[in-house]
Amino acid sequence: MFSNRYIFIYSSVMVIIVAAILSSAAMILKPYQERNIAIAKIQGILMAAEIEASTENAESLFDQVILEELVIRQDGKVTGRFSKGQLTDGKDRAFDLNLKTELYNKKQGKPYRVPLYIAEANGGKIYIIPLLGKGLWGPIYGNIALKEDMNTVFGAEFGNDKETPGLGAEISDRAFALQFLDKTIFNETGKFVSITVKKGGVGTMPAADRIHGVDAISGGTITSDAVTKMIDNCLSNYVAYFKSQE
Image (cartoon, rainbow, N blue to C red; front, top):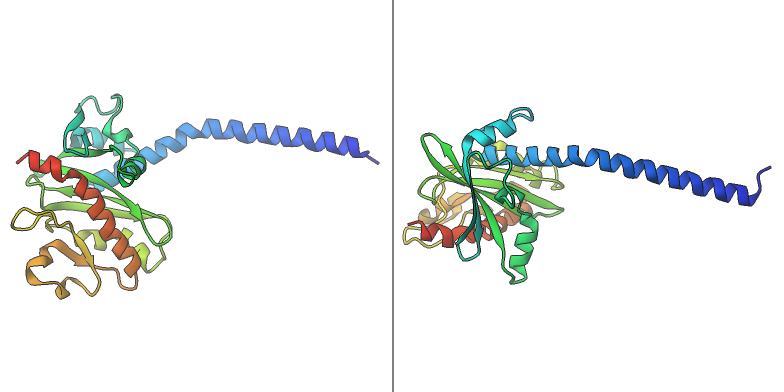
């Protein structure tokens, strides 16, 4: 029969061994996890440019398609610029910005920066803007690409982690994203109006506003409203930059 002292020592040693194994495994797997996250991020950016990428070719396609990465301050000034050939080995790249942190800084009234990807598509430039927001049950995210006029949507993609299947989670469906094509974020007077995910459908909007709206997800009103807020919050960060390019 083992004594209490023996059992205590044995249990302590086993806990230490298991902790060491788990810690080592986490350290070994971390680079692979970070790479998978980066690949998924690249795939989302490319999807907004209407380019489907696999795990195997995502990085090479990114380097082919993306002409520049810009880091933009809240006042529209460019503080970082990486051109083709520098995208994979640059320091403080737009790709490395933590959008969650930057948007939190914005909410707190602190200085913030946002990433912008300039790509080549259909013989012209497009501007790809990452999106991040809060859905009903967890984060929602995506990318919107604008045409060379910095106003008309070229492509979009959206994702979620925890929205309700069959309802809010349908923002991840390609059919939802395709609604955004050729919508505009500025009105006829040049005022930023974003894009509204409209409950009841764009048919319920005034005729002049329908170019700035898409149909909401049926039964997913809260998530649809969250997408509207996300788009407005993220796109508004680029208005000063876009105006400076006119």
